[in-house]
Length: 297
Image 1 (cartoon, helix red, strand yellow):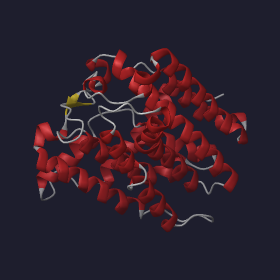
Image 2 (spheres, rainbow, N blue to C red):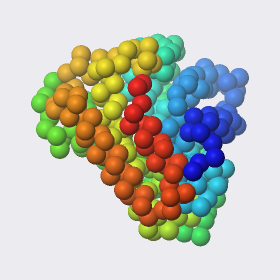
Image 3 (spheres, rainbow, N blue to C red):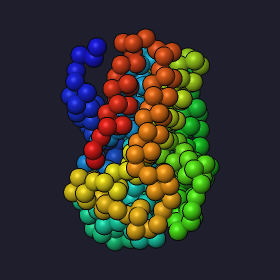
Image 4 (cartoon, one colour):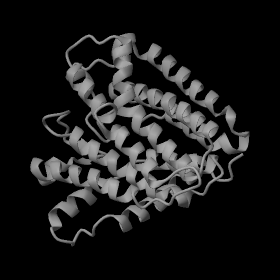
């Protein structure tokens, strides 16, 4: 049984991550001020910080300390935020809202928004290079993990498949490939990097990877369901964008109810992967998985 409620746990971890991000990023009055203000605007625009929270929780599941996972957690959040800034651009998903606030390009213009994303991506690697080696993992392992996740075969590749899939009737395997790249890859890497900071064994890292993959697929399915069922105010971004863009999503392919069933199955598969851990060690990750499955926004 976890001592803190999940809500209190998430809030506590978010405070740790926000403080670390504040110390790692250039100050907003550091020259050139505009780019540093734009970087911080998107980083501190709100959000649940689920990827860094998962990073810290994975470290704890592998007998490590959350504080030792803060550096990779911040690097992951920088990469995630860069992807959101670019995803919202007119040439991509063309959204005016993110986390309930005007998107970067609406505030700073497209040029600065692109550069803010570029800067955050670059900063993510400067940050991940600051990790401490463990017995099993070196800085090189962390950098390779983050680079592969953000590259053309995963995060960027998933976004390419997503763009190319608009107005096309993608099959279930095609849609899964989109989800694997655009969502599951970074979510899994968040967990893996946290586990690595705790010097995870090969068996632990394998279990964490399987957990992250299935959790990532379930997360994106629920995200696509919410795009159809939640309001703009609830989502903090424009609702119904997938439908308007004629994107191929799992709910669009099989219907909302069947999509919910698939999300439940993927969440169960994620939890099954955690059987390698003791009930006490896996409890928090199970709580997070259940929360993400049942979230309303």
